Amino acid sequence: MTAPMVLADQVHKRYGRLEVLRGIDLRVEAGEVMCLIGPSGSGKSTLLRCINHLEKIDSGRLSVDGELVGYRQRGDRLHELRDREVCAKRAEIGMVFQRFNLFPHMTALGNLIEAPMRVRREGRSVAEERGRRLLERVGLADRAGSFPNQLSGGQQQRVAIARALAMQPKLMLFDEPTSALDPELVGDVLDVMRGLAADGMTMVVVTHEMAFAREVGDSLVFMDDGVVVESGTPREVLARPRHERTREFLAKVL
Amino acid sequence: MRAVPVRHPGRWLAAAAVIVLVADVVYSLATARTLHWDVVRYWVFDGRILNGIVVTLKLTILAMLLGVVLGVALAVMRLSANPVMSTVSRLYIWFFRGTPVYVQILFWGNVSLLFPRLSIGIPFGGPTWLSADINQVVTLFVAAVLGLGLNEAAYMAEIVRAGIMSVDPGQTEAAQALGMSRGQILRRVVLPQAMRVIVPPTGNEAISMLKTTSLVSVIGVSELLDSAIQIYAVNYRTLELLIVASIWYLVVTSILSVGQYFVERRFARGSSRGLPPTPLHRLRRMLIPRHTTVGERPR
Image 1 (cartoon, rainbow over the protein chains, first blue to last red):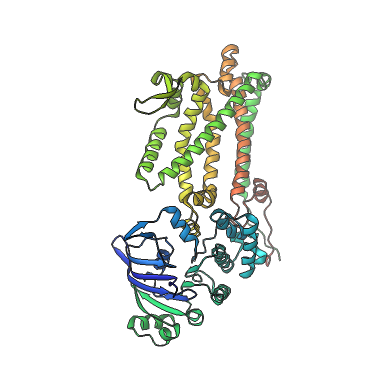
Image 2 (spheres, rainbow over the protein chains, first blue to last red):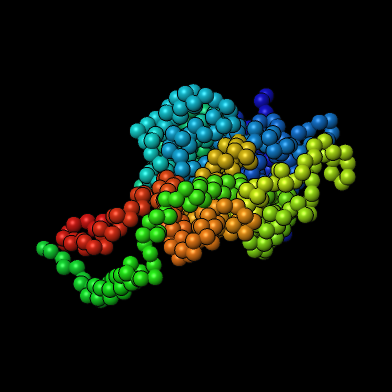
């Protein structure tokens, strides 16, 4: 049996006195698409950021692909990872942000080749070739030379997805990828994500797109107030929520 | 159908009044009997004056280079998580911004009174490997560059810090998520975007520096103003030589302004849909009001 891609065991995270994650248990298998839903402030985004080493957890265990996040186990001791090691781990995980966060001073292609060239030390031609292939894959082959401000929100987000894929990650994290988009632009982004899922990419998606969760997700997790309230297949959770809080939330968004 | 734009008679009246005033000042200067423009013409290309300009330019460039490099380092230190780094940076800025640059130049010019010898070795009285008479290392020119540059660094540090802080934290986060290191993020992502905020005040600093170099005549460095002073000390053509110096300061600051303008346009890339209008565009738009036709898309 292979190790799960993400395994969280009683993960706690607090900012000062505010406890954002209060004992999260989670398991994402390789190739699985997990959708995270829940009201704002429920800790979904924080959980994603913890998985990608952008935040340190305060207690519990969190591992990605069988390796602890932020620590290396030697004997019965945990050694905190050095900056370089953390960077190497982050490079293996792709992340897509709500606000795209493309580098505005670089072209679309420039955004795609930056990390492969600087972090992976790839040659320009290799990086550019993969970059162009990825732009084609997200339907933007003709926009390689465009700067982000010359692209629509939907196009920017597709470039951002391609930028994350350029590092050939083993896991993709999406933090509300369509929340900042005009409604008519959401479809193109979801299409790209659908294609990724079909290709077998392991994905954790924080989303408010229930239709996407139902259609593409293998599992659905409802979080509220820093805990996982309920999880299961999207069909089960959406059709027959077992918890009162899930029912209340779904009644508001569906 | 044609739309008639609003008329602005007030603007034309105010412009006419100002033009008359300016013309009067120019006329008075040009015809003043006490001013000998032929003397100005005689000295403006004098060898000593031209040498002075070269020294002024060298001082400006070297002092700005020192100021920018040290300023970036101080800004990064100031924003560092290491409390020793940020405190040292804060103290540096406090000291060099809190004392007059004139005093600092005098200090560097007389540094040999404090430290007669410059030594490299183990600090706190340990063995010395290299030692030299400080006056041979810190010549008057070097003292001038140090005085101007170290002072400039304090101001540049604040400018760079403001630039770095103006960059959306989401940029750093996205770069981190891609596995880029701190140094890479600073060099490749944050600083290029901070430049948009850093360049305009740095242009101001460069222009201000050009004029501040005139202070180093106090320690006997023959830059532009000092050359002019030396000449009028002999021939008593004080006003004419001050005008000669002013003409050259104006020429160089004008060239610097044009350079600044193009550097700004370069770093505006990607930050707005169109580049800002050139001064020529702006002048034309002001003089020739646009007649929009109803139904035409306003631009």
